[in-house]
Image (cartoon, rainbow over all chains, first blue to last red; front, side, top):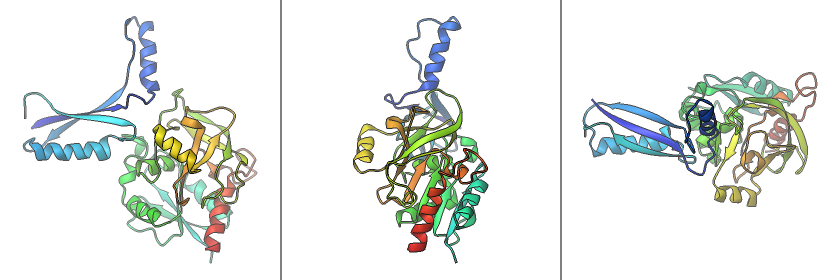
Length: 84
Length: 226
């Protein structure tokens, strides 16, 4: 079974207070040198059957209508590993 | 016979009983609707109450938006059915694209629960006609995903068309852009806000004020005069 990964991130112009809280905690924990952190969501989809253009188009549609809210978020779809 | 107002219960809804009670106190008949219902039982208006429908999984309101009852609500809203979304209900309305923008985690990351002063900016909607434009009211606010965001163009459009229905006063509680607490659609039949008018309808409880009652008397007037 092939795996398709959908990454969802807040659009760059949208404030991400959760990412900021992580970033602010880093120096205290001894992790220096991180200027910015943005937090997002990753969906791993195990696809039944071939991951062809039609399957990817459906996944794209799924991401656009459900997995991401495109008012505030961007998403990327990629096939995991060599499977394709 | 008085007008009938549907109150939707999703799995995880919390404020359906309080909302039904507020509807009854205003002199309307509350009708319980379930998220799986495929019809709206011929109600004259619908309220989406607060809570954490579907545990806020994915995004607040994102899964409820695809429930069977919402198909009918979206259809009805486009034809002029009055719809009010409170808190989680507001989040469902933005996820449904019945109202523009989206709700995100409060900028300070804390759950907030307090009385909140608001200014009624638009007293011409189906749900606000019993207020005066510019009137200041105080109702409870309780949420963690209450930060209203939309792109600049949408915000300018909302302001220009008078569609910012409520604004936070005395400090912005969550980082909402332009202090927006609630908005309306262009037709004025769909209104959403984060604070809770249904918790401020009786002097005995809450703020001791009944500032929220106007939402329910507004819709009563609209439906009875219709």
